[in-house]
Amino acid sequence: MVAVQPFLQENSRRRQRPYLFSMNFSLVLVMSIASGLLAGYLPGFFQNSGYFLLLSERGGLQASLMVGAGFMFLAFFPGIRLTGRGRTGTTGEPILEPSPAEAATAYAAMGKFMLTSALIGVGAGMIVPYFNLYFQGWAGASVSQIGTVFALGQFGTALGGISSPWLARRLGLTNGVVLTQLSSLPFMAIMAWRHELWICSFCFIFRGAFMNMGVPMRQEKMMESISPQFRARASAGDGMAWNLAWAASMFFSGSLIRYWGYSASLWITFLCYLVSGILYFHFFREPQSPRSEPRPIPLNG
Image (cartoon, rainbow, N blue to C red; front, side, top):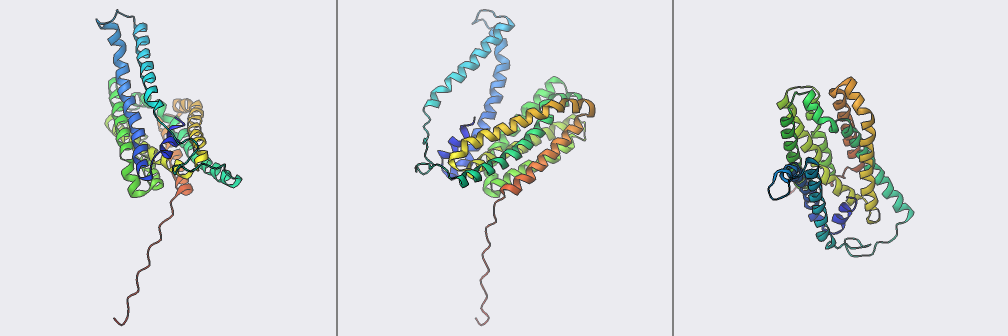
């Protein structure tokens, strides 16, 4: 996962990258949905199919895990055909060792990306792991209804990822990231206020779609902002910041929900996402292109 973003950045042209990052994000998400459906079907298939010896529940689960391991093994074959540029950039020129000033600049940029990612991770850890309980306890949803809402949410997120190149072309990478992230906040506020299942489900789907729509643009912006020598470290640091922040917030988010309810947790997430979006815009806003001066109108013809 650390290597994917630098690989895409260094083996593509600028005009291709919005589509590559978007397709990578959406394809992984769509295939995770398909594999989840397959994983739910396979244990029963192995237990009841006449093509195999009748297996126990444990045996069916073990056989399903072996199928998953088989898919991972098959991914090795196209993987070995991927060829990178080694220690060369996109132009084929050798990458020189960075100077201390270049290293300081790169680490400063990495720190800014990590800070904004950590804030998102804190907010996500406050509510995302508990969304199934939220729908059950807050909106009174059944298990089947929760599954349907989650499936629609995943498809909405995948469609949002596919649309990110369109936004990047019209708004720019930074503005696209900030706009999509802030657009998710009204839906989160409604989820903290209303209890109706259809309203909460609608807001859940669009919250996830908007929040994740900016992920491909964020990845491209980070790879674009970091010099080639530091891209792998930036990718690793950004993922580490998000996951560690998620884990840290989960130490107290369960107790917060228990004593203060889902509304408090959602509002904290709202605040974390808002601060992250403001900081991201402050750190990485793109300079406005200077407007051309109007040509003077001659007074005498």
